[in-house]
Structures are given as structure tokens and as C-alpha cells.
Length: 119
Image 1 (cartoon, one colour):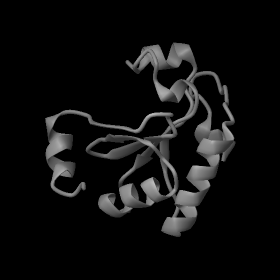
Image 2: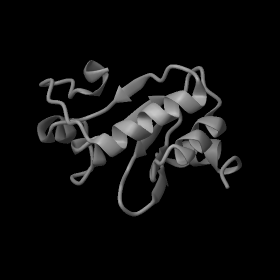
Image 3: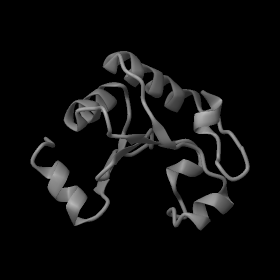
Image 4: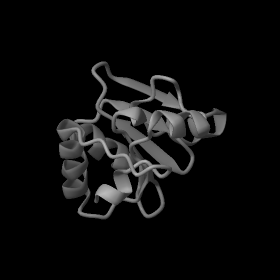
């Protein structure tokens, strides 16, 4: 599991127990594998990929591929697993454990894809 969470440019890893506990709880709730497309990012990699300067990925966040999952069920299970930050993409769901709950869409297509299914 550490390899899927490590920064792809340098291998730097951040172990943050609350985020890892939520990730494991999500996997148990779903009873299915999760494909993490982005976990931790070092500051340099975050800047290179256009990440927000205060990105949760610089600590530990997860972009989960939607392929093979019902996106609505995935989001509901993530909320029940303790995630508080939700970024809704067309092909992925961003999850993190920020102090203040937040949710956002990655463009109008993502918003259209998700909006009718979110409560």
C-alpha cells in the first residue's frame, strides 16, 4: 500500500493515521479494491501538476478512480468512513480528512455528472 500513496516524482510518503483509517474503513465498507490515482504529493510535484498551494495532497489525500464503482455508493461510503473533503471529478473522487467539511466539482461536466445524485 505505501507505493500507491507515495509521491510519484520522489517517493516521499506521508503517514497520517486518521486518513489511513478512513481509507481502510472505506475499503471494508465497499468490500472492493480501490485504485488510488493520486495520494501524497511533495510540494514540487504538487506545483508541477497544478495542485492548489494548500492542497490536502501535500499531507495525505486520495483521488480514487471511479471505474468499477457506483459513484454515488462510493461517495456515501466515503462519508460514512469519515472523509470530510470531497472533490467530484468525471473519472475520480477526491477524498481527504480536512478539519472543515468541503465539496467542489472539477468543472461543469463533473458538476452535471454528480449534482443530480448528491444530497
